Length: 256
Image 1 (tube, rainbow, N blue to C red):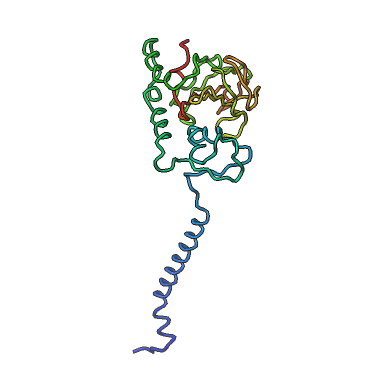
Image 2 (cartoon, helix red, strand yellow):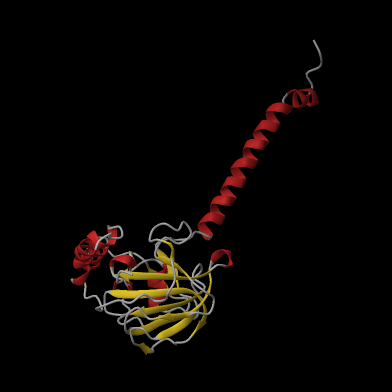
């Protein structure tokens, strides 16, 4: 038999010792990572207000009704948000009013596809009238529809209308400008117009903005000039939102 001294015993157990040390190292690393994850955790149900944010901008970003966002956070009219403030993005338990608005926004008109005849167009538009639509809508610019509602993989929430860089962009209906800037990723220079308590319209990828926040605009008034969208293509990204939810603009715009 060979020697069984202390050093011999230690050498014989070396592979097992390596396995134990490896297991301890993995456990320690997992513990450290778990602590870091806890410290840096991100709550998708909340948003921290940044400098320059407005209630309408935040609601638009998350496809929420601005009234709901204000109510869930006790903001009153929403004019008192401040940088660093954390806003909840979902209703507290038992909030039936916002749930009702959400159901209305995802109703028949929101799910319908573009109508092919004037009679089916009128039928598709009928449910929207109960949500206090602003009246007759106008096309915001001339040009061919490059991408229909729901068809653009990068931003399916509206129409992509082609044209020439610099051509006029007009308000689709009268209302108040509640956002004018470039703070929303994916929209470039953006204008949002509030037409009623239920309806907003949005105009993205502009080259120049001709109106400011708080300004009243009339239907057909020039509010911007066309810029370039993805791929350097001159276009307007146009949306209509009812109670914060995108709806197909074709259901509201006149046939042409």
